[in-house]
Each structure stands twice: as structure tokens, then as C-alpha cells.
Length: 523
Image (cartoon, one colour):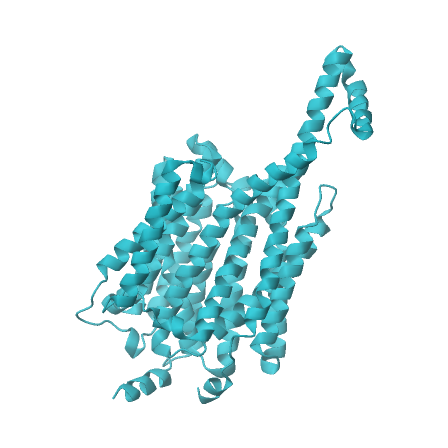
């Protein structure tokens, strides 16, 4: 009987054209992924509106990611409680409503709560979209569908800073949330018309919620995100509260995984981690997502702080990533199955590593092409890496495992992205201090280059200072400011090089994954 159920599940296919079915799915995925980064370049404007510091405005980003992480493991429960189609529509509705609340918020507290609601509504969309796409297509059609899914997931966070910067500069930052309202309404209409529920994703009775699993998940993720957001300002473990919060997060993490292993009806089924492809593929996707979101967080920051770009121009400088992703998608569509998934993955990771290393070689005497070329290569690498690795990670799973597996995978990816975004701020701060310590020893009277530059500045500033003593002081201050700027630039460069090395390190792991061609042929 169990074998018959599995066969029925594997043979299920949509009654209509699957390309119509996944259109609202892709639209919802794009809207969710876009909002991961659309507010990045608008943070200074949001902070100014509510008269808060830039550090406090960071909660606008982290509350969204944290809420998404918490709701993702509950997707399987809600799909069985309401039916996946109904739950998908509910998620889009909540996301759209929360977007309106973000736009009309009158305090930093209100917008943080609204962004958390947005994360709750949106966090369920991408895992369901991935599962629906994998289930609705077989063989070569699945490759094309997953290529489009991968493009949406990758391009949306890249377009976010560009769109957010343009709207912020030309209209006002609330409009970056208001644009979700018409898109959400269209998505709800299309989902209601085209989406279908497979037998194993329909509404069921007597559904059990793992209350303790959900509790331990919150105990794990909420303190963890607070530590990563505020830890650097508090000098990390030198602050007692950081130690306590870290201990609580660690205990919550351990208890969560114990509850999921020993529980009869766990929040997420960890048995999918026994699949080698899923285990290592998910690990690779966590690292790639951390690199993607961390780089998207610091590149606009570097361009605005170091090169004086405005929010729109800094977002526009990232646009070549989208063009690189589009080109790689066209290449994938033209070449198709003539190359293996591993070959695409090798190409992608190599491009990611190369693009990251080129970004690590930037300096302040650059032209736009020095930024565009590595971003273009980076964008191409994202599609060539994430798309095949996502497919390989799930290709050996049964269709009835897809919703749970994609939920767990997206939970871990979101955590990876949140941790990467938080840690990169610490990397910039600490690397800058290291370089400042190394460079400041050159500012002394025994260094002829320093004396020559100081005399030149003092001579140029004597008219403004009034006498040689004051002009020398101003010249020394100017040189020190340049040292600070140079040490910060070196910190950005070091961070990009670390991203590059992380991508190259993933290459050997790719050979562990198996390509299940036999399963594709049978399907």
C-alpha cells in the first residue's frame, strides 16, 4: 500500500499547463526575494525619518529575515492544515497587507513589527514555490523551470537596491513597500485560478503542531540574531549579556534538533538530511546565500561611503549582476542537458570566486567598468551555481518530501544569509582596525614620504590656518583621515577576498553530489 501511494504521488501532474501554474509562484518568489534587499539603500532615509541611528535602522532588515526563518519550518504543518494552495494565498495576502503597514508606519517600532509580519507572510512563499516547481515538471522541462526559478531568486535581490535607490531618490522610501500591493493582488488572483494541490499537499484532518519544536526554534533564532546584530557594538563576549544570549541560543538550537529527532510529529522532518545530495547541497547553498546577501549589504555601503555615490547610483552599480545572471540563463537554455549539473556548478563557483577576488582588488581610483565587470562575472556565477546545486540537492528525494525538504533548506539558507549579513559588518569593523594599526606606524617623523606629504599639505593650508603651526596640525589631521579611509577600503577588499575563497573551497564538495539521471528518465 505504501508503495502504491508513492507511485501515485510521483505520477501526479497538473491538470493544466504547468507553465501557467508556476507564473503566480514565480511572481510571489520575486516579490519576497526583492524585499530582502530593496530597503538596504533606503536605511539612511528611514533612520532620518524616525530620528534614529543607522544601527537601530538595521532592525528593518533583520526583523524581516528573523521572522522568515521562524515561519519556514511550519510550512508543512500549515499546508496540511489549510491546503497548500490556500496557505500560499494567505501568505501573499499577509505579505501585501504588511507592506502597506510598512509604508504608513509612524515610528521605528511600528515598521519593525510590520517588517516582521512581512517576513511571516513571505517566508513561506519561496519554499512552497521551489516545491511546486520541482513537482510540476519532469525531465528536461524541470531543468528549464528550475533555471527560471533560480534566476528569480538571484536577480530579485540584485534588482532590489537599484529599484529601492531609484524610488528613494525620486519619490520617497515608503513607495518601496507600496509597489508590493498591486503585485500582491495580481498574484492572489492568478494563484486562485491556476494553482493545484497534489494529493499529499491537500487539507488534512487531525493535524498536530509541534509546540515545543516551535518554542525551541524561537529560543534559538531570536537571541542569535540579536547577538549578531548588536554583538560588535558591545565588543562581543566582553559583554555579559552577549554571553548569556549566546548560551540561550546554543541551548535553544540543541533542544530544537533533539525535539525534531525524538519527536513523533516534529516541526520539520530531519530524515531528509540522510540523503547525501540534500545534506551537502544544502550546506553549499547556505554558504552561497551568505556570500550573496553579505556582498549585497557591503557593496552599496562601500560605494556610498568611499566613492560618494548616492543611493540610486550605488544600486545601479550592482545591476551588471543581473545582466550576468540573464546571460548565464540564456546559455543554460541554449546548451541545456548537454552539460552535467556538476559542470554548471564548477563554472558557477569559479565565476563567483573570480568575481569576488576582482572586487577585492578595487581601489578609490577606479572607473565604473572596474565595478561592472566583476559584478557581471559574479552574477553569471550565481545562476550557474545556485540553479544546478538546488536541483541536485533535491533530485534524489521523493515528491512527497519536497515541501518539507525545501522548507528546511530555505530555513537554513535564510539563517545563513542573516548570519552572513551580520558578520560582514563585524569583518569590516575589525579588519579596518587591523589595517589602521598597521598603517599608523608609518605616520612618524622618521618617514621621509610622510614628512614630504605633510609639508605639502601644510603649505597649501597656511592661508586657511593663518600660521604654520595650525596648518601643520590640519595637514596631519588630513593625512590621518586618509589613513582611516585607506584602512576601511582595505577592510572591504579583505571581505570580498574571503567571499572568493569560500566559493573556491566549495568546489571539491560539488563532486560528492550524485546526478540521478535514471530518476529523470523514469519521470
